[in-house]
Length: 291
Ligand SMILES: [Zn+2]
Image (cartoon, rainbow, N blue to C red; front, side, top):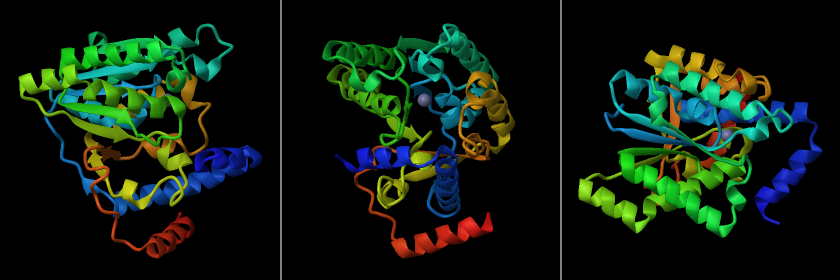
């Protein structure tokens, strides 16, 4: 049993209310640290983008500000939803259509036209365990979209995002981008693609020092989205079927004036932050008392 599986078992033993409180405090500390000290500013770029979103809402929570900023400058942003979103309410036969409508509404607020939105409708919750043939077909489907649009920036959920569809999306897109044919299309177009990871559950569910390491935080960048904050918050509210079921304090983390991204290409080469572990712990404890 690996660390992640042990943690999942331990979490199941903790009453949900207590678990959410602990996760909220944990997330506040990490946000406070990353936004205050542990990240570099990310300059707004004029590059076209493609956002891969496992479910209908991840793109808005994770990248809504970036999407709105680019669209206000007339820069193309394509959004690809991988699953049908059925998992959020397995007993409601309408939920897939409801979530699709909510996604179109949220993205309309952020400035994305329906023609730039793709729904691949894979069964929710299955991306990590797709049979080999379906997995390969999905990678090819993603690669076709990437080759067609040739985005200069690709946004994926963080590779450790603590949700199996989210982590699988990272892996599937990575394979689609690394495919020889995709690389050759980019080389011919003279484009170097940049991959950025957004976070949904990472800072909420991944315990610091156990799953979320300091070297992960060292690749954090913050993008100021203050000028489009209102649009993002309205887009989040479009997901009315989802926001009521999310833990207390979770949605609040995405309403601020910054978005946090983690760059992929520097992932393994960046040195761990020089700040001693002890200092981060002390600052974290202070953050709890200052809340
Ligand atoms: Zn999701």
